[in-house]
Image (tube, rainbow, N blue to C red; front, top):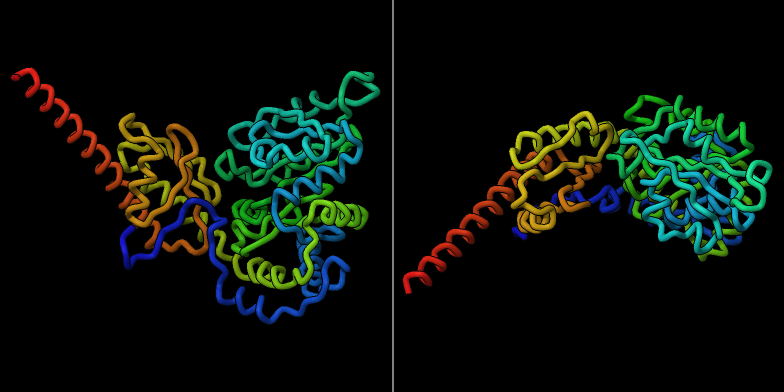
Amino acid sequence: MELGRMVVDLRSDTVTKPSEAMRAAMAAADVDDDVIGVDPTARRFETEMARMMGKEAALFVPSGTMANLISVLVHCDTRGSEVILGHNSHIHIYENGGISTIGGVHPRTVPNNPDGTMDIDKIAAAVRNLDGGGICYPTTRLICLENTHGNCGGKCLSAEYTDKVGEVAKTHGLKLHIDGARIFNASVALGVPVDRLVRAADSVSVCLSKGLGAPVGSVIVGSKAFIEKAKILRKTLGGGMRQVGVLCAAAHVGVRDTVGKLADDHRRAKVLAEGLKKIKQFTVDLSSVETNMVYFDITDPLISPGKLCQVLKQRNVLAMAVSSKSVRLVVHYQISDSDIQYAVTCMEEAADEILSSNAKSVHLANGSTANSYGN
């Protein structure tokens, strides 16, 4: 990589480094033993998060995967329970099948639409219980949503849609969990208070180390009874940590300082998408860019996502290939306007370099063939 230039890291919003304010808060944090339940900084942070989300209580956990796993297991506390969730959801695809391998919970998938939703009728049709299915089927106990929906390009689920899913859950005596890893991005993009977006939910997981930029952790919010059960599972899974106030202090700064910057992340993502659209070897759907994620396809068969990312890295731009033809870019608060412009320039240069290199290889190959014929 080129020396003397900062890296423009667009692989994910998980790559942010702790700000100076976060480091100062961590150093000054008033701490105690959180497993015993007496870490004052953790208690204050959890209380504030519960208030912001409109729920009774909250619990800090090491990761979003653990947050979702605990939430599903609390709601599905009988082995052989079933959860309805999107076929393209993070819980179903990227969390190591933990709800099944650890919790004995059966996933029943419903297709995600391009906007991250699932059809309401299909959710209702997927519900199975002992009264209607006899002894042959798992018992449905939970529905899971994801907001924003990562695999659908960071799309936002509206409060109205979530309310409708909540009504389905209530009608069938089920619980509703929201994987709200980037719920604050949805709140800012939709212009809707975060507590309104999750009003219908019985539990929500919120990632602190993605859009909010904290170094570690997630929180789970829900009723007091739910959180008491969650604490037991956190301990069982090895997620109980001692002086966790050090991490909660950084997370508090992330919530305090970074939520107000998310609109800039979204604006920069749109500028990035517009720049990519002008590069003839790429295609991007501008209407799909609602928050801080940009997915684009490579239309030239001579350019692979892996090769593109490799050449970009040589220019200090980091990106993530997500399929045989697609690349994902994620903007975060440590990406500036000039970083976006630099990244677009490098994208165009990288595409040209790859094509030029391919052309030279073909030319050399043809020349070698001609020489062999001459001999």
